[in-house]
Image (cartoon, rainbow, N blue to C red; front, side, top):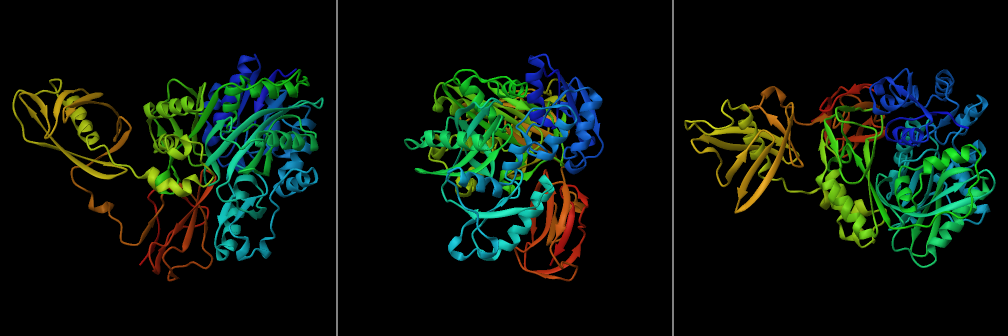
Length: 618
């Protein structure tokens, strides 16, 4: 029997596994890096063990340290979560060799599917339909577009779509570097890219006695950088017979490698065509939608199978519909740039929220940018989608920029509501989904709330005063607002100020009464869903940068610099010059104009903050 579980992971998934363990009266052990010393998963576990270092390669990818931590803390089982070492056969063997229970599939099954190229060979032999890999050196114009893909790992890292043959070599190199950083394996391969395909997957659970259960389907077509953003169960609007073919292929895949535990078989679906993509030999990020529809706890099933239990009878049937949205600390309008800083407040009431953060926690640069998974369940798809969009719209999120607005608009987009989406959804619609008009009254509400909070007399003065001016910055630029203290109270041109308090301002605008909730954290002010930064009355001339400056769009590490790039080099507009690594993803910084590199401050391995001057092109 499992009595104490160490989760070889961090953040949301560690907290998720701990929750089930606590319900089953199983002791929990966390491991944490120096960067995660105060992280939620380390706080909620019964015991926590430090892994010295900050980066994944120093900590969560060190299998020998994790096994030692389990033995030191007295755990008798290890759950890998997802990512990191969850699909590493050598780690699974090390756990078993140490006399611990491995809460996952046999190492041989992991090994069979760990390499996506080897997995395709096995599936082809088993008669599972798939897209055959291409020889990178033999790709021609006729083969385009193609997808460069990491042979190991997942989560969209090490993947690139190539539409121009001249770009293939560079994208192979970039994908390999990203895969090496994320998974410790830079091997990549190339396969055909299917336009307008849907990403549909099957959740399977198998015991050690030969039984394999298929838990319906999930659609995960809405993706950015090949990483899932919105998932749902069951997959809607599949062609007749496709679901049964998916189930048959998924169970055949599991039986081919004598699978045990929870896993997911992923497919690309285009009309009636079904193509095997890969098998994830672990729990998926999106497992909650399957739990909601089937009324099961997949982590509890993992624990049960690891203890040798049989899957008795038939799997439960589905009921209703569930949709999950991944809330990321990132700016979709700025090439999905990850964001860091203090998460002052995170509240999404009324639905399931799986997260690894609490109010006041810090979002750092070393790990994935996902803050939480918001999951809504309802009897029908339309109701579930509406419930999730409404909950996110009403959510309170104070801290780094997030993709919340993008999620809400995506859920309400006609292609999604009518189930006509595919994996290129954001390629087509990102510009429209991220083009928004600012709330013109949010800065005024912030100023009025601040004026009330600073007044000795509850916001009202007995004598008239001169017009007051406040300046703010938002994602839409700078804003300047004006208001007055009068005998009647606070006034502003064009609106009636019905009431003004430090946390709530009520305005009448064109006869319509509007409420503005106001919260302040330092120089940041949150007005409903608008984030504002308080600016000084007069700009600081020292803050100006010279033309042609390349600034770090996010905090991170300089991963590499273009070959041969030195001061004095001639560059063309759009040339990639510097690659930053942040939250396990590489981000290209390109030349803003054709000219000469007059300064290069970036050095590989250098840690930089947002706004740091990396280079100058004139």
